[in-house]
Length: 157
Image 1 (cartoon, rainbow, N blue to C red):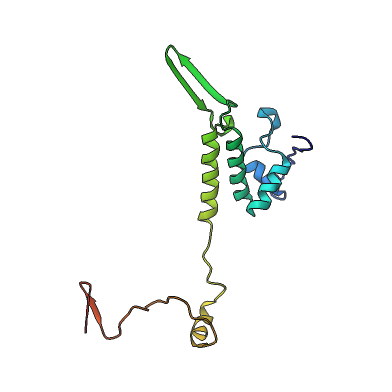
Image 2 (cartoon, helix red, strand yellow):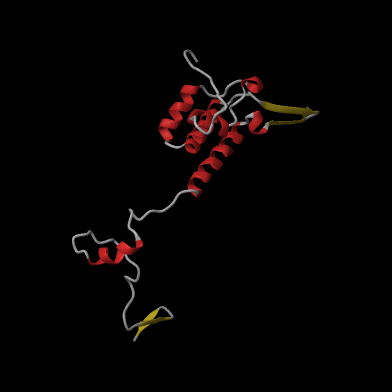
């Protein structure tokens, strides 16, 4: 790729590009050559907004570039039996890169938190009484019937 740069400064704690390279094991040119340029990684970071999501996108880019390719594919033949496979992440099989992308996206999803828009617990009763606020579409106990008991699917008093 003309004008592309390929760098790794061994500092993933302070350099987002190095962090993404570390997550996808693209840190050692001597082993297999660079998988992605600095520009491709920086673009992925800009698209995704987090280093793990950018690393997942990079894995998908690598898998896409290997579609139909025999790069890093191992093959063995004994008589009429032939087996061809990717050699794991270090070997870079297309399926392996897609699995890594799924794992990275799952780690991001597992760390997600649910927020109620900054409402503190002690503010809730005051907000319930404030008629100027938009009412939520649902609330706890909205289907409760005071004085009624539900038994076997039917309500009775």
